[in-house]
Structures are given as C-alpha cells and as structure tokens.
Length: 228
Ligand code: SF4
Image (cartoon, rainbow, N blue to C red; front, side, top):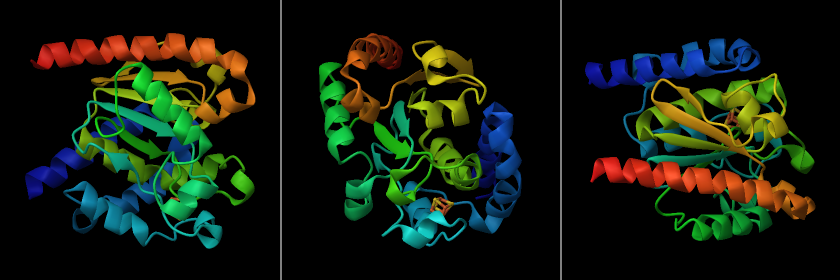
C-alpha cells in the first residue's frame, strides 16, 4: 500500500514539475490537500468516486455532475480536452456532443477507437455557458487529472485545444505555435492540436489537425511495436 502511495506521489511530483508555472501556483495547495496517504486512490474507479464528491471550485455549482473521464484504464494514448459541454454535462461522459462525434471520426481515421484510448478534460465540471475555464479553475481541478495520468501511465498525451496545451505544455505559447510539435517530459510525449470544437467553427483547421494526428498515429504504432 505504502509503495503504491509513494509511486503516485512521485508521479504527481513529476507531473507538477512539468506543469506551466501559472498552473502550479493554483495547484500547490490543492495537490497538498489531495495527496495525503488517506486520499490517494489506487484505481481509477476510486478516484472517480472521490472526484464525484468534489466541490473545490465554483464550477460545481452550475454543473449537473462531474465528468471524470472515459476509456482504457491502461491506455498508452490519452487525449485531454478543456472541459465538459452541455451534452457531456447531461450524459456524464467526455466528448459526446458534436465535438466528440468529430473526435470519434478523427480516431477512426487513424485506426483507433474510443475504447483503446483514454479521454479526459482539464476541468471536470462544465463551465457556465461553455466559457473557457479560468487558469485558477484549471489549476484547482488539475490534481484529479494528474492522479488519472499517474494511474493510467500513458506514453503519449494529446492536448486538444489551448487550455489543455497551455496547462500541460507551456502557458506562454499559443496553440498555433505549439501544435504539431513533440514535447517529451519524464517519459511522456506531449503533442498539441486544435480542439475538435475549433474545427467545427473553422474547417480550415482540418488539414493541420490531420497532419498532427498522423504524427500521433505513427508514434503510437511505434510504441505498440516496441511492446510486441
Ligand atoms: S471543476 Fe474540478 S475542482 Fe472544480 S468542482 Fe469540478 S471536479 Fe472539483
């Protein structure tokens, strides 16, 4: 038990080191509160149960429920978006609205399925009117994502959109600057691309996303090849 807690704490420390400074500022007190031995879940189900009771930020006031995440608990490939929208808030699953349907098509195009990967968001509760979550809200919710990552241990994380990219890769760069480039930190390869909702608003972004996803596909297949 202690070994498991130690591994999770170590993984969170590594992830903390990876985060953009603006996210660390808000993460520090929450991470300290949530990484006590008695509060370190050993499984995603335990973590999901703990997250479901969270009232750590005001987003919970207007959300119907906490949208934890979905997919393969041992996925080598993880997708992280911004936060739940109306349909996700209603169904309790990430990426099930129009943007989610587009994400499914993108996954199919690179020979992947939703069941094979893991999908989560930076914030687990729907921001009112689908507004962008604040840096403070993202930082407050981040311990749940860091614990998800620690338990899943993905090799590749695809940041969908600027909130995920700026929280996990670099708070100072725009998504248009970051996308399509690999960032390797402590054994995890990060890449950013445009959020599927952005593609729905601006179809001209389909081509760069396709280029980014081909890189993801190739890197993922390389990992699978290593595992065989
Ligand atoms: S958004 Fe995250 S931190 Fe805020 S209440 Fe929901 S689960 Fe808790």
